[in-house]
Image (cartoon, rainbow, N blue to C red; front, side):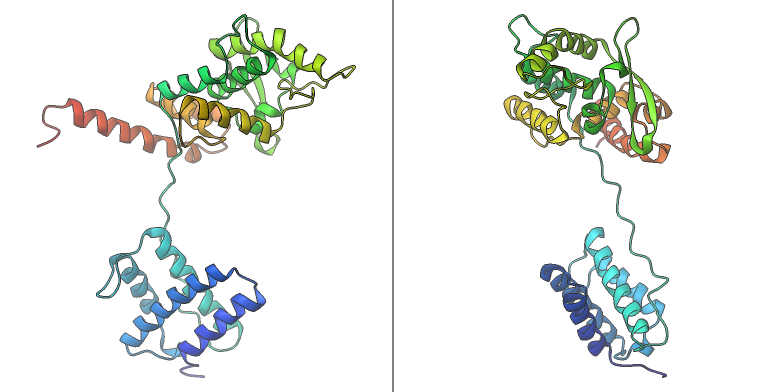
Length: 318
């Protein structure tokens, strides 16, 4: 086999394989179809219609054309270009596996690296509005058990950087609020870490544990309740979905948009770095196995540095 079959036939068979044998969603198959038709056209423009004529340089040039654009196409975003290269790599791997070609010219061509997704953090003022919307600070005298719980939960998430799953999995004996308050969190992979609990979170937790949690436990009608810190209205452990509901409701009342289950964790890390905290300290507090995972937050703070620099330095602009 010297030149192999036609690229157009291989594309047709590969798309059929994706749709029928792999059961890929129709929208995804259609996206692959567009990408591979463009690839086929680029090869044709280089005088190559057969699989055996395609080289790694052809595939690399195709990737470059995606990012730069051409007469008939706008430049693609990195994510769209990466999808197109994945489609091309899949096509050539398929042709080798099916015996349609002897070599895979796309094997050494990697998709473009996707930019790091910046974590979503909200401002300190937005955090304060969110917390106030959850319930009265430190458990005002008129606070009901659920508002005490909700305020304590959100204060805890922002004050410790805990994941929602870590908060809902927390047991009473893992909290030490006397003296210098700390909490023992069970993170991913069964790894534990000890994190300080700030004064606001400590006071909110104390108010909830003294007045809110016993009331939730009594309302359940159970003779005894489990060790969970955060209880639902039936006296059972608050679920991740329940905690997410608390956060979403408070965000709605506070008028804070774009809030997700990780928002307070991301804000905790970003605000620490903005305040001058060492990256490795933040890594330990978040329970990241590698500092590389934590470094994405430095991108956020660099943006803030640029903003402040541009606004404050007399020769930054102009």
